[in-house]
Amino acid sequence: MTSDLHLNQHTHFSDPEYVRLHLKNSGGVPLDITITLPEDLSYDADISAIGELGKVVDKIKSLTIDAPYHEAWQKFVSGIGEGHAAPLLERLVLTVRGDVNNLDNNGPFTTLSTAFTPSPKLIHLQLPAWPLPAQPPPQLSTVTSLAFDTPFSGLDIPAIFPLIQAAPHLQDFTFKAVDMGAESDPDYSNITSVPQLRSANVTTPGFGLDLLGNFDAPLLTEVRLDGYRDGIPDAVWEEDDWGVDLTQPASKILSHLSARSPGIRRLELKYVQFEQPKEDFKRILTGQALPALEELILERTNIPDAALIESAGSNSSLKKLELRNSKYVSASGLRAFLQGRSGADFALSLVGCPGISQEDIQSLSKIVTVESK
Image (cartoon, rainbow, N blue to C red; front, side, top):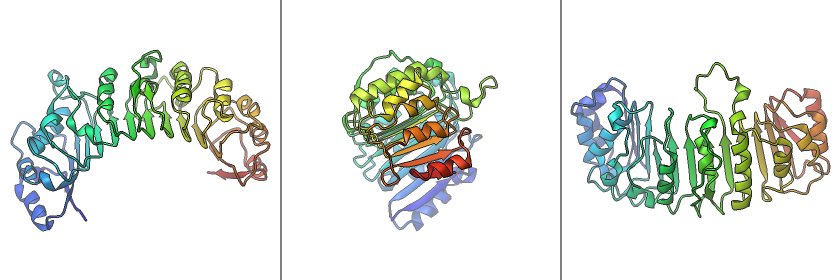
């Protein structure tokens, strides 16, 4: 049982009675605290809520701080957690809606080195991908889930690797950024051992590929790679143009995953285009690249009919294929691919594929189970 405390209005931060009353009525149970900081709150002045929350750090189970810029969350983290142990803390989520407020503050920070330490139960930590800690914070020693999410450009990818390496128990990794695919360097090498990693969710486009391509993760079973980040204004690029810059990096990523993570069972590719689509997708569909793959989800990729046709009759472990907005596939290609498969051991899902009609779906349903939305 926990008590939820939400702070999102000016009075919640200026009037200490709001926090005091909630804490008094919470009955001493662990606290789930969500702080959404207003854009126009003065962060140079004293904020009474910080002092009140600093008195109950030992009761906090979950803390989420959503800030308008970097310095704002730093003020709250240091003000609440500085010098305090957090024995119950399991989730710490720090998000920003914009870049640093003062460009002089865009260097590495040390806030987490002395705040909420120790936190022996912490399993999930989310940080902005810019700026990064000056050194791996001690909280990483226990986390099993680590996320970096930054809604603006400007990242220092090499500095992220030491943070990942400082999390020996890491099982789930998420990376989201808006940098362009052209900024990816498929030849960048910084092989990083993540022996416990089970899932990787990378929304790039760009530098996230360099992270995924350098993971040595023998236990990795689930990968999601999204080459598009919603909200990037670019009137020149149409929706299907996203992923074009990723062709060479994406093909290299496939090779790296094949060699280092052969146990991948679920692969989702969104807005990803391969340099040699027929050969690359054929390697996936036939199990040559990922022999344990059971579920493949493709959205707005450049998978062609030829890859489906040439994969017909393959004895792979694939049990489900989901195609979303795949404009280069047709019913004939799918019929060829489904040869030798039956509805008992295979499922097909089709969403928004322009080359597939309702009549085609009905025809394909006679071969395997077909889901259509």
